[in-house]
Length: 433
Image (cartoon, rainbow, N blue to C red; front, side, top):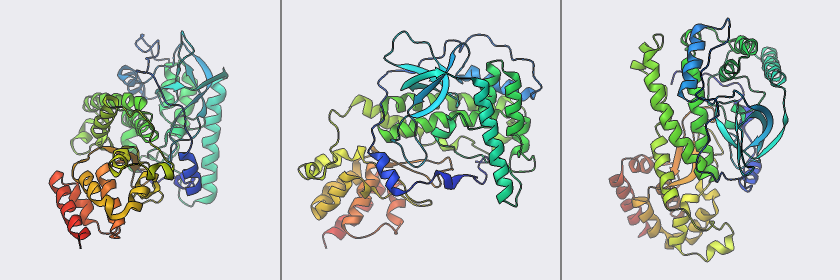
């Protein structure tokens, strides 16, 4: 998509399978509200402070706040804890970070503006924090990372533009360009200038699209912002935080429309929209919204059992009903997801040929999403939501010892219901031999 360069810290995102499985067992707080509030000064007039920053950076900042980038003005900057995803897995304990606390009349649920430009439900609130000190920490952390790079790499340092995980985007120590916008909004021109000066270190105009982004940073800022919202929706979906997921996904869809309308209005960016869809990673978004709307309309009344003994007492039809809660973690990149990590899928496999016909029915007709999400690389923007019909196909192939190396079935089922029926018919014949 023109913004993905070679990653610098991809190996740091990897965790052992043992840690991933352990993380799945935790139960972070689930958001119970119906909406995310707007910061109190979101629509108040704003005059940018006097600054030496590029005019297009100022205009991009102004436009992003008009489009809804969360406004931190007039609020206490506090220690907070929020629930986030974390690259390879979700279900981790709440993240300790700092943010701007929205006023609240009750203690039932508070919210805060975080460093990725989104408003988050807050799990806990701590002391006031020194904003300038936090910015200094981010700058120092970035400088140390560049020194380390220079000591271990022959190639010059340059900024990587890739899909950062939610815990990184909301952290105090991450030096990201969206922080310039938030600091400008607060009138902290000196800090904004320092962050921008440090961040553009390594933004060689001859590398990839840097010349474009340095002249008009709107695109990279907008993509960071909408990615943060989309990734929050994906993470919330995976951990079963459905209200937060639906709110975030619907908001991301609105942001996508607004950003696509803005890009052609900016002279530097206008020529590029004719042949690149910079937001193509959002193509699965309607599918996610549709599935989340289904879950909101027909909420599950009981928790899906995970105990093997209890699962053995369930009917096969009930197990298949549970598949929209199936969760497996992608272990390898590139690669797929082995859905048999999930205990429900494991029980269906154990039942063998007795489960094949109900599973083939799911392959043909069940378009629900599971909780599992895969990607080509953790640092790429693409996300694929594993469906129940894909899970049913994988399960049947495991029962029949067909394996998952033959890609013809996987390509055929993506052609729609007729493709799924054709694959089900082939497997049905194979099962009868």
